[in-house]
Length: 208
Image 1 (tube, rainbow, N blue to C red):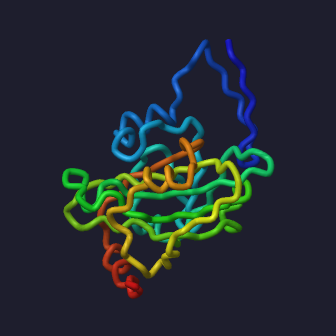
Image 2: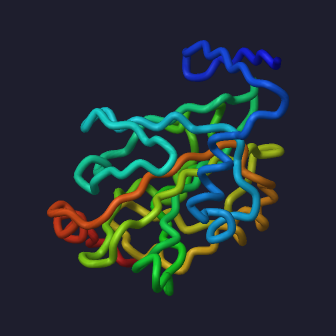
């Protein structure tokens, strides 16, 4: 019997298992083919992600709506003292999972995050919620957290939430360029078109 005590996001969790129990996060990433569609090695920790405005939570592939995820979520994970992190959010199913010719669509990138305080990080691409085109089925929206070796100088053009020029982004290349290693934590949900999507598209006014 193995007993592990974890403190995450202010919640004390006791995890008991016999021998090497299956990891729910890495299992979900593999089962939903995020490995290998987006990353090669799945994270073992789960990012706790909540959308306060709609009172929903991301739960390893649960289905949410674009309306529910329209506003920036709250995140926390099991961070190390004095460590800096990078957060990525991407859609590998653009414009559809069966024809992902725009893989991957960059939804959110924040670097140099102190601990899990995303609001204090360096925004490289501001948050944009889900906007799957009508008739393209479910898309996977993946959050990944990487622990940095040190503070990183990012050579990236910062994108506002009004800029839609985010397709054909290669997260693996980004991670390699900045020597971020493998993700330490992750989570994802799935979503398909709803009536909010045209409203989201209407906000895309900055194309420079």
